[in-house]
Length: 469
Image 1 (cartoon, rainbow, N blue to C red):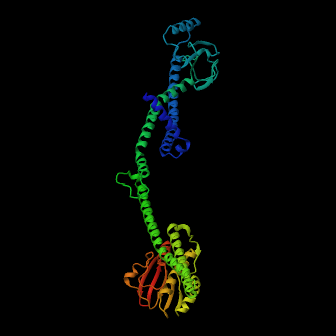
Image 2: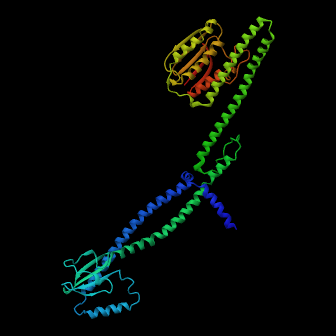
């Protein structure tokens, strides 16, 4: 009964195996190429072995034919008669197994005029007399046989007879093939068992990969803990290390996203609550036109603040999610970007009587990049500088020596606050200016995309922000 239960299981396994599966199977490809290369190598070795064996056999039988021909040439053939041929044939037939090797060799004796006076029982009678073909080996066809024979003709010792000794070449070829076959057959049997051994060894050695796949497949979606590499084979440790590194990056990204979503929800709640309150006030001030106008103005500012916050959140989200979305192929003109941005802040600058200076030197932090991201980086720094500088202050934008600096005169930031300026949604207490607390976080992220660093310091000239390559 167990025998019949195994058959459906084997059938199910075979049904799962298709050409595409085998094509991408390392085990199958290893076995296939090993068998292919081994077959080619052994085929070449077998051919060389056959050629060398055939050459050795030819040398052996040529020597044997020559010795036999010399022995026959030394005999006395003058007393040979037709009766002698008959008696000899009869004696040979009475010898057990005398005809087993009839095709191995044959001989015949001729008179100089071409008359055959004696031959062996089977093949010699078909040999032809060929004048002037003595002392050398010739490959010829004999009468009644399509196969070639190797013939040697010699004069007898008394010079009165011609001895011809021949052997069928097919016999030599069959003998060479038999020898090669006997030599290679054990190797082919060993090769078959070697393939089975390699298949079993390959399956066994690939088990760590299967266990790794099962382990990862059985993990929960939030389990990003590192995979233990202590008991893993050396060959797959780089793969496991890369996977652990990827798990770490995914865990960091998920933690960042969760924190981002939580902080975003918290920050959006405040302006939305303020908008709701202003809307309720506007609804209750039907008879008070002045209050309604003031409420609408505050409502408009609240909408603008919420809009600015959403824009900042979207910008930061895109920067975090897709680093390669921005192609770094544009040639950047930092001075031109600064000039255009200053024009946008001209009204605010004039209202606070702030002087804005662009010191355009050489070598900005990066010369190629995305124009929109670069403008966003400079805009956030300029926006903070204009908002938080006192009246009659001086703001300098300087491009030189691989750096971009923004200096606010008459501005000092507490050392404890300097360490937290790039935190998301961080705003020091007591700020009168509106903001989302995301500007410098976005600036830092853009700087990181271009392999730059963001520095803050209180210098003698004032508060300084530096982007440095």
